[in-house]
Image (cartoon, rainbow, N blue to C red; front, side, top):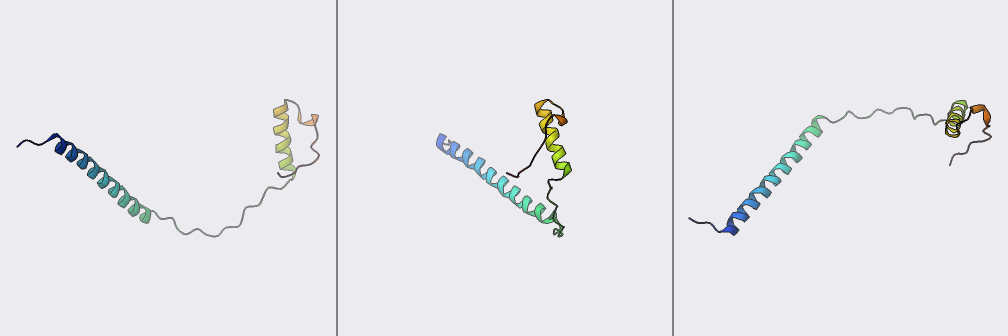
Length: 85
């Protein structure tokens, strides 16, 4: 029996798409299975982290970064105020 070229092409394309749909379904099912197995425990409430203040550590870090960028010593300038943008 002789098959037409169109029939062979359609069977090939159909087989490929059927295989891709099967792979997508398999990956989706495996994802659902592993997500339910590896579900993280419920998060406990923790204390909120303290926001950094404009204390000495922040001023020291900013002045060190400015001195490095300008290529000078930290004592060569004075930071008068710091504003949050």
